[in-house]
Amino acid sequence: MKIVLVGYMGSGKSSVGRSLAQRLGMDFLDLDTLIEQNENSTISEIFQAKREIRFRKLEHQLLQETLDQSQSFVLAVGGGTPVYYNNMENINANSYSIYLRMSPMQLCERLKQEKSSRPLIAHLSDEDLPEFIAKHLFERRNYYEMANFTLDVAQKSIEEISEEINLHLNDLQK
Ligand code: S3P
Image (cartoon, rainbow, N blue to C red; front, side):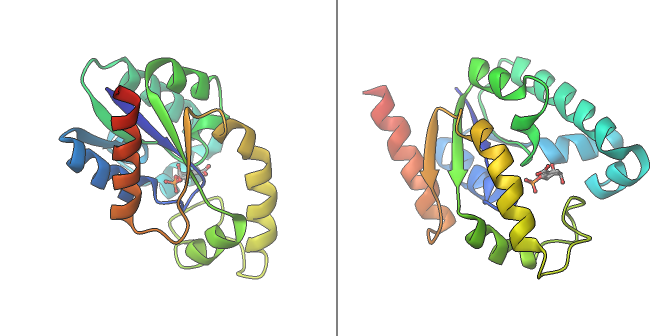
């Protein structure tokens, strides 16, 4: 089984993915990490040196290669991955996709502390962040909502979220 976690930056895809993979005894993969390893640079460096357009191409190629693998895994993709090329269709054709949903306000509180490693928001002041996130999430929502399952994750611990997903996956198999 292949599981792909989608959602906006800061929604907890990587932490939940790691915990879920451990629970299910599956490998955990993180698309941003695969890109960084492939390019031997950080995401911020890739955005700076090669621009977003090149990053999106790399993201698309590595997503395709990962989904083509035959082994089971839990994969956390980047917040923008579902929005570019036919990535979301490809995710749904090859995996069970789960959208970790949070409101713009909740995301904003999280992202204030984690801006610097994220090139799309690193330059924004704390005052400009709420409006940016609200607009950006509005543009991306339709793609995230294409996921097979949506889970509201605000106010829940990583363990609670991965347990809820686990129970949902068990229900599906009944
Ligand atoms: C991005 C999200 C980031 C990373 C890149 C672009 C986006 O991943 O892929 O900075 O477009 O939302 P996270 O969602 O893991 O922060």
